[in-house]
Image 1 (cartoon, rainbow, N blue to C red):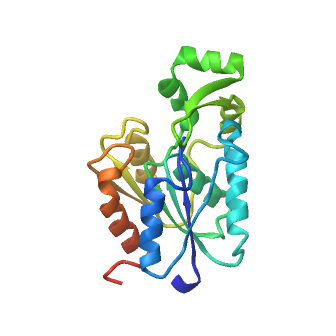
Image 2: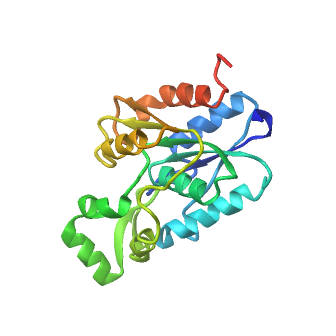
Length: 218
């Protein structure tokens, strides 16, 4: 089964397929003679990003191997989307690796952006966020309304590994604790890190490859 698997990586909000974690894991897979697809979820652009559009990107990425079982990595927003796509396509996903997954985003937006700012975003129809190159970019409010059409906590059937930083202030670790505690197929590993997980890249590599049966002990 391992030989027939396909692997994909989904980046976070204000990020891209060239994110540091994505590139690191792609290098790890390459050293094993395997390929890690890295999707660009900012389609048609970061300004027009929606969950529904990003799920369509995953549809197209996985269409390259429709009969293969997929393993999806997802960081932050990409972690939520990996879980959501697995919920919608349970027969297509063998395992998930979620890095500080952005569950329940719609409830946390007022905390992230600010209550008054959310009202302005809705009234204006757009709000400025840094894109993957840290360039201020106007994101349309349809991003928020589209988020509201998707469940805050997708239900996944497959074995799932969550790696979450205990000092994460962007996506507090409590959301992953609650998610894992209620689901026997989900394992949570807490690391001493923030949302970026930059200091935990070696741990992410070792933990996830062991979880996939690709580690040194396989």
